[in-house]
Amino acid sequence: MRRAPVPEVTAHFGVFRTMRHRLTVVLVGLVLIAAAMMGAGGPLDPPSSAESLLNERFGTKVAPIYLLLRADIQADLQLNPHQIAGARNLVARLAERGRKVKGMPEQAALAERWAIDEEMAGWIRHELSEAQQERLTQIDLQWEGAAAFSRSAVAEYLELDPQQQKALQLMLAEANQTRRKRRLEPLEVDRLTVRARTMLTPDQQQRWKEVIGPSCRFRFGETQARNEGAAPGRRVTVRPTRTPPR
Image (cartoon, rainbow, N blue to C red; front, side):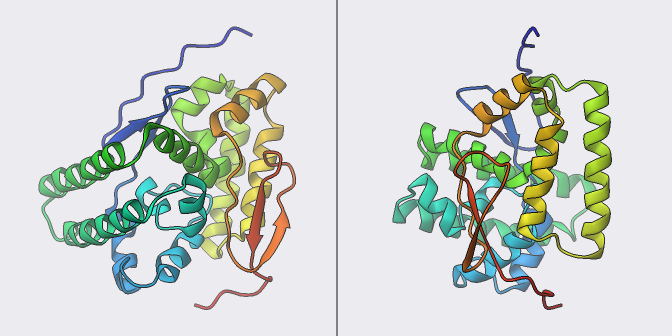
């Protein structure tokens, strides 16, 4: 199978680029969860409030800057105290701006979202090393899991055929229906990723492994469980099964 050239992907908002595979990661608008972050007390509260909200979004797109609030990802990236404090301060400042976007006229809101995401992208480029930026891109794809296969850059890089794309779309649509009723537990999200990978050819699976790099150990509680079918060695920490408080 001839490997297709990796497409140049432009986004409506800021982007940053992986160095090895030239895939890009769209920085999802900060305003999407800014109000919830502020409602929880804001990112400058102890990290548990931010991490709790991010746990709810495991398996979906989030702005990569939010991932830097998680202790597990900070450890993987080997962020120093200056970088950790800088990321938290940036999120706090931009979350307040993002919360105000809701009351703006459409064009002004669009321009402000653009400015917010550009500032996030600029901070990442300036404050993280190239190796950390590339690793953050890998972790971002791992965090999104099966849903990452719906990204046009990923689909084109892996050369997903129409049948594969349709099967993936149906699987993700089913998962989204479940999400509208309740939160998906971390192991459920991982099983979706495993199912998605089984739809790939051996060559495509190898490309995916190369794109996501070594597995990140995401932690969601005190009990650690093996993530079967994910990249070798990956472990996901999960809470005991229970109905989450409303």
